[in-house]
Image (tube, rainbow, N blue to C red; front, side, top):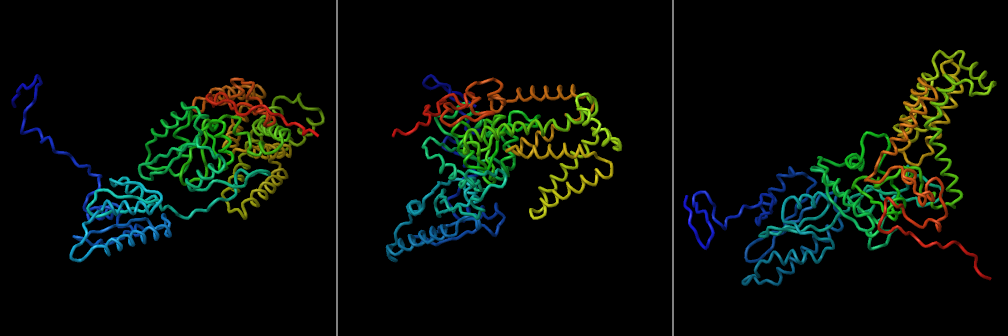
Length: 531
């Protein structure tokens, strides 16, 4: 090893250990100019799968070359593929006719790919196997030319889906009937139909080392809070998992707090709901393969609002919302109050009602808490069975099973008639909530409150509700307080919380969600026409 000084710099001279300056390491994932090598690698990697179609078209010239066309049967539109192949073959035939046998034209692979690019709408350049496999397995058609270490992918995605159908989980009396499908591109198109603004931006990424699921982030630039957008990007980029099969995977990875029964990310399958949330400055997360779209940040009041609230008159919507809030307290506290009063606080009941309940419970062998627990567990089992059974018999089994079991239990002296009434009212009230996730949260919390009521009476219920409220106030959804606009109290937000004032009075967007463009509209109350 020798050192020599030149122009004030120290240079290390080691001819044995240092490779030549012009030596470069080739990327093992890069495509090869040899088309045979590329096709062999593709067949080997995909295990010679029968649904991967590879067509080789010879190209005449100074030397025989090949054009390879690759697509996945079932994921690509056959009509578009046939059109693309026919155009490519026609172009090659036209070029061959121009060449003379004695004086053949030189082979120009770049020109062939350029001409094919002009014949297709969506084109993406490919220079490595990772991009090639992602495009090929996503439904695109890949074109490779012998002698070039790159290719192109033409957009030919056209697999079969169930199309746009009516929603089954979020029914409304007045409003749009359409629901999202399992196709990401169909879902984004349905949102753009409702918001025709150039500031509606869409960012896409792939998550899942094996599934490579397409994820879309949609928001309205100029209205959304950029800090929340960046936080969404950061949390999605941190996800390192082998597969994403549904938006529920994403929800668990990016939620603020996991140890809570309450959902902190809103999901819906209605395009009109997504459009309304985007107009408030929120962010939609779309996952390919599922009709349920996520919305962040999510507030507690969002789970109690239905899309129909904004299609009916303000007085009707306000009345329906008050019914929902009343249903929350009934579904959460009705069994607990019954257990507490019949066990510890008989003096709170009127005398005649007290004598009637005492006569019913005289033959019951269990305490009120065990009685309520048996009925609630039985009803939850029947409800779950009704969901899992075929639609033709599911509803019949759940209704008949509830009536038969309840009547038989009362006649057998296991359950009192009053307990059946309380459980029935509780179950009906839980169905009033528009959000299935929030309904499950209150159904789960019903059991610990019943245990507190059976142990400590009304004092136990008060302690349980206090802990529940403190827990709700501590939750955040992407930095936004979960109980906003109640905690912190925002007077402007009360216009669209428990009550819904007329549209012309809703002047501003939620302040904690949006800070850039708060003003929604100018105040223009309806006026009578001048005669």
